[in-house]
Image (cartoon, rainbow, N blue to C red; front, side, top):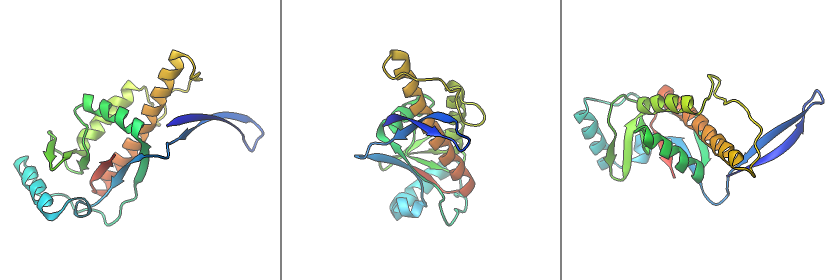
Length: 182
């Protein structure tokens, strides 16, 4: 991913300095809301329900018919943000719209609760100093110096935070599992 500085002119004639996030073409990860039936085979679904029952969850909520969220994110952004989530014990490849405390492994997937993700996102938002509107304080960035490189890294984390927050909220609202595809 790279940030491309652009100068745009508003309708009122003012010039605005903006940065455009350009994702690499070679490989892009995704956050996708997807029904379990489309993600897991029947045997895996049975294993999942058994493990959830061991955690006290008798059934999954009724899922929405359609997903309204599918968002690309660069591999670098995903890796860096998953490291942050891992530090908060919230890094998973599947988030379910039910509440439980622990994550568990299921045939190569790490399964966790969307509530755990939402809690971690709130903490990470505070760490990144993102305000209630979802934006951090803007600073001018010079990518050439060390502070500029750190600011670019923080902007990438903020972008990933916004994507994950939108996906987590859509998961909780639509009652569809969130799958992190790398």
